[in-house]
Image 1 (cartoon, rainbow, N blue to C red):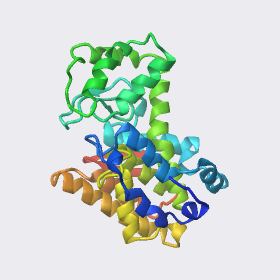
Image 2: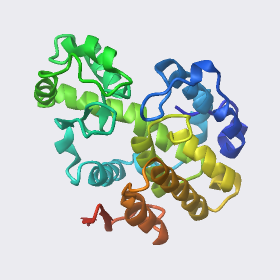
Image 3: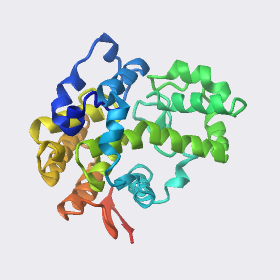
Length: 298
């Protein structure tokens, strides 16, 4: 998902933003989350990540940060408080519902959607490893509804099939793997390249989850590009707290632009609170509010 074609880009991410926004016709197709099509997503990955060996060298010596097991567990809890109103993020493997947001069915541990390609990719990859799974027969329908909010070919059995499959360890592991591949690992990797600590890595991850890994104005990479135009990240000599404040401002504005009545408490009374407290390491104990509910991790 990220790019570091040269070591200079890895060390000074602010210099690569223009390339992130350069598009060809192949890069313009987007789904309901503002994510590029499968082909353009792959090429966006090239532009934003580039030569993986260079990235590996740039981040290898840095602290684990959000990728440390305890911090990764904490990250899933905070995301789940906003996505599923619970700290028990594992309870969401079997979740599936059309929430009326124009993205079809939202399902699973990170909110994969039938209309935004990530659910289709999950089922395709899972079927490659487990051909006889209970979701495989819905692949033709999933390909047809991809990019739409349609349930055609999915009702009435897909919901039941998803819930049943989620009782199997192999499918739960597949969800975790796809969450990490598409959202967690790219977000943490780029945050480290931007010189951000554990809180900053979480802020990127939560934005990646909610806005999708798109290069459009409201996709994660578009939001980051806008933030970089207003402030330097630590890797470019900027102040970490100031940069993260700008990133959260940009993200909040994007949320309100899409829907003026949108609840932004996952930013305002959660991530902003951690930032205002100076908790750049995302140390526990933590307390935050989302949608009026208070959550605590000792």
